[in-house]
Image 1: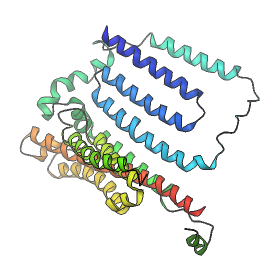
Image 2: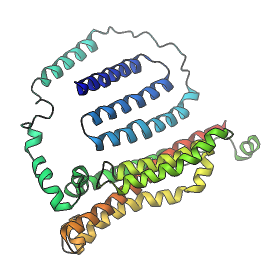
Image 3: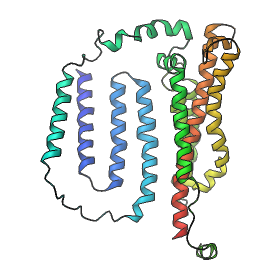
Image 4: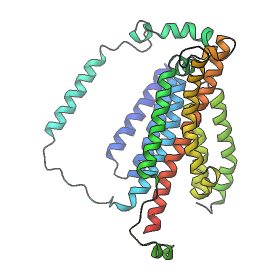
Amino acid sequence: MIESAVDITLLSLIAIHAVAIIRMRSLFAVIMLFGGFSFLSAGLFVAMDAADVAFTEAAVGAGISTILMLATLALTYAHEDVQKEEKQPTHKPWLPLSVVLITGGMLIYGTSDIPAFADPNAPAQKHVAPYYLKKSLPETGVPNVVTAVLASYRGFDTLGEVTVIFTAGIAVLLLIGGRRKSKIPFETRSNKE
Amino acid sequence: MKHNLILRVVSKFLIPLIFLFALYVQFHGDFGPGGGFQAGIIFSTGIILYALVFGVASAKKVIPPYILRALASLGVLIYAATGVASLLLGGNYLEYGVLASTQVAGQHLGILVIELGVGITVMAVMLIIFFAFAERGRSEEECE
């Protein structure tokens, strides 16, 4: 009873956030709402007993992404006229609307085949999960199964993930890391400072 | 925000706690929720908070960019080297069991070390990205 009340509250708050994000025109407010959206998702993960995922969502989704998006906004905001009225679209909305409705309808139809939440006979619970749950503590001595799977059984995947993050850092450094070469000559620039 | 006294005092109080929590998440990841990814992010937010309140320049004095670049590669290197170490000790790549006398002790050691590598890389890369953005904004302002 309490669990479903929590779920419904969180999900409806997430839906409200999503609608507000679509309707808002101020990018700053949208970023703040993104943070709230992530935080509510983290709450939903906690309600589903996925503490590690919730932790990651709260730290990465609500924390660092918000900061990085704000930093991006600080780079781009000043140069764009945000108050400018959006142009009225020239085409009719029927084609995109029908695509969205058909896709959404098919997705909703597809959910009827998804096993119920925490169904013990679901394929996800049948494959390797029982092995991990039974064997991870005696084999690795690590009580947190998520850490055992992530770092030991799936160590190769995690190595790949770390490499992806490292590559992302290199890419950002290469793209915007160096100071931009200014067209203003050096002397005039130093006078201005 | 340089002259906001309350922010400065509160963040000076908070930053050590953030670091402490990051270390807790890092080294307690075997027992509770958390691990290298989350710990790295939390650690970097501590320094980002410092950069926001005291300025990017002073944050760069705390961790200079060249150290960050070295740390980002060091983390991946620690991870990959753990795999090589287990290869040299006669196991498969990233088979931690051979790292110590018993299987469980080896697994424990291996997981601790690779999580440390993950944490270092994530922390360094997040700060590299943040500094890249912050620096970019400042250099453009200076140009205008």
